[in-house]
Every structure is written in structure tokens, then in C-alpha cells.
Image (cartoon, rainbow, N blue to C red):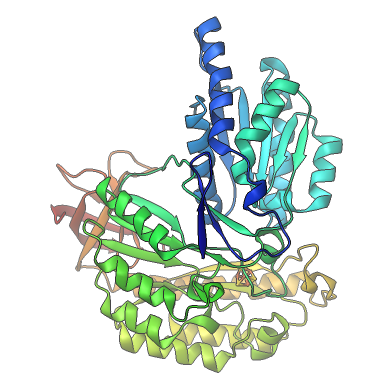
Length: 490
Ligand code: SF4
């Protein structure tokens, strides 16, 4: 990968030109940041106030991570971030289009803010995957007049420029790049947490599962340069970060687009040497790319947590083929056996779709069979909903909704039973927990995650957010564990 230094100090990891915007067209990011900051300074001198922003984030960890970049840019531009319940001058929506109900919720939230916008002269900025769809942008243009700036997943780094243009000209801006030919490095970032962090390693997806909109809205796979990733993790470690989660739609194919084989496994080994990092997680893994080298790396790297999120989606090979998943039920089960053999105390979690068009009772029985055979600690289960623009959306839904609901209930019951049984095995054990701080439900107690990614609520003295402690598990349910004590380990 050819790395060039941009005049304004931001670095573009430029991949081979693929017909999109190249480095020549890159805007001078820090120049735009400074221009907006000057506007904010002038406002503060005149009024004694600071312009406020708030963010509403939907969707997956990739969106959470993008939001940290947007928050970093806004901080550098001189804005103050406030919580969602406070009035703000600019409201940012980081949107998600993976499920239809998320889209509907977002329209609802944007519409509900029209009063706040009119009263305070506030305006809305909308970005994220949903904005990559032309029909969405058209709808916003026509029906949501308080949305003044729209940009997409490929041009987040142009936000300061768009904001400056809107603030000075007051004309609505809709700028969504269709192409994704570069990885922009060293954008500002405002991390949500200090003790744990998300680190992008690969953007986009090449897999085109027939039901999924992601490749259309996040583009093709673009791996970050390994040195850039390691430098980011080293900086995080120096700043007190103990746990990192490597992110990508399919982390297992990290490096394929750079012409390197098994680069993800090599990355895991390289992170082992970074002092201060105690835990490494990653998501999401596509079963077809889970190599023996990666399984070995999980076995050999002490910092890699014994947890793997491995979506199987359907237990039926026939349905998997219709989903374009490129593995069979047998292949999935043999991967699970391999990983269990290599990492005996591994916790497995998964995603499952119920009611994909054409799913018969027999196909569904295969799904139940996989759930029984694997024994997942947790599963994210969804009823199939078609996404406009995907091949599966053209398939006729031939399963009555009552049948789908019955299947879903059956699956949920089975999975909850299995998860409870597995969780019960932790009772009486002492587990290592990274403390996230007071529990959201009850601030009197602490909460954190085990290496298996189980949520633990516990009582302890002299324990703080970011500590790694030993906790004795006294009670366990399918979704959380209850513990006591907290001997500090780090
Ligand atoms: S691997 Fe499949 S489900 Fe996952 S993001 Fe890519 S296309 Fe979507």
C-alpha cells in the first residue's frame, strides 16, 4: 500500500486507483477544521457561549467507532458535546440500514426533533449507512427539512468542509460518495472509553450474502496498513487502554486485498508484544474464512480472549446456499469442533436468521440441531426482513408469519435454555473481569465483562472502572452473572 502525506497533515492509505476519488481530490481536512473553529471562536467571543452538539447513534460497533471519529472532529472544531436530553445547536444522526425497523425508528427520531430545531434554530446532520441509499436521501430532501447536511460512509472525512460550507452559505448539502477507494488515517478521535477501545482493521465487505445490504453501503474490503493499526494500539496502551476489539465486517479476510495471506493471524501475534494491552477481541468472523492459522493464533496468543462470535445464520445447507454464505452445515460444525479442540474453554456466540424465504420445517430443524450441537453462550436471533436492493429481496416470502413466529419462539426457548445451562456452570467459579464502572441499572453495584464476554454485576470495595479483578460468581442467568469480591489483578 502506498502511503502519502497529505498537505494538511492527514494521511491517506491509497489503494490502487479503482475509478473513484484519488488522493489528488482529497480536501485539506485540517484547514476546514480550523475554519469552523474560527467561526466558533468568534461566536464565543461575541456571546460568551459555546456551540453544542449531541449525537444519536444507531447500529453496530462500526457505527459506534465512526461516531468517535465524528465526535473527535467536532471537538477539534470547538464544539461541546452534550447528552441526548439537553438542547443542542447541531444534532448528528449516525444511521443504520441493516434492518428495516432501525430505518423507521430513525425517521421517527428525526421527525420528532422538528420542534426542538424550530425553537432553538438547531439543525440536523445525518450520516451513516442509511444515507448511502439514494431513495433515503430523496426522502430526507423532500420530507425532513431540518436535515441540513447529509454525507455517507465513504466521505466522513469531508464533514468539516461540509459543515463550513453550510454554516457560511446556509444551503442544504447532500454529498454522499459512491466509491470507496481510500483509507483515511489519523482523523481526530474522541474515544468513548479509556480502558477499552474499538480499532478498525478492515472496512467494507466482499461477501454479498444475499440478504445483506452492507457491501452496497460500506463498499468493498479495504484493509488498513498493519503498521498503522499497531501504532494506534500502542498509543491506546500508553493512554491506559487494556482491552481492544478489532473491528471489521469480516476480520478474517483482513489483508486479502493487500495480497497477503493470513495477515489477521499475524496481526494477533504482533499485538501480543504490545505492553499494557491485556485483552484482545475481534468481530465479526465469517466461517468460510476461519483458517487453521487463525485458530492456532487464538490458541497461542495469551491476550486473545476465549470468545468467538461466529454467525451461522441457518443450519440448513440448502438455505445457506440461497443466502450465498459459502459453507455447509457440516463445514460449520467441523469448524466448531476444531476451535473447541484448540481452545477448550472457548465461549461461542452467533447470529441466526429465522424465516428466510423458502425455509421449510426440515430446514428449521437443521437450525435447531446446530444450536443443540454447538451450545452457544449467546445468540442474536432475527426474523428475516428483506432489504431493498439485495438479491434476497426479490425472493417471494412463502412462509406464513404465524409459522415464522412459532419457529422464532421455539428457537428462543431452546437457546435460552442452553445459555442458562452453560451460565450455571460458572457458579462458584472465580472469573477475571474487566470493570466497566457502575451498572447502568443499579449504580450501587459494578459491572464488567469476563474474558468470555459474559456480563457480570458484582459488589466490591476499592474497585474502579478499568481495573481487572477476580470475581466469585454466586448466581448465573442466561444473560448475566452475579458475583462478589474483586481482588485486583491489574
Ligand atoms: S459477511 Fe455477509 S452478512 Fe456479513 S457484512 Fe458481509 S455481506 Fe453482510
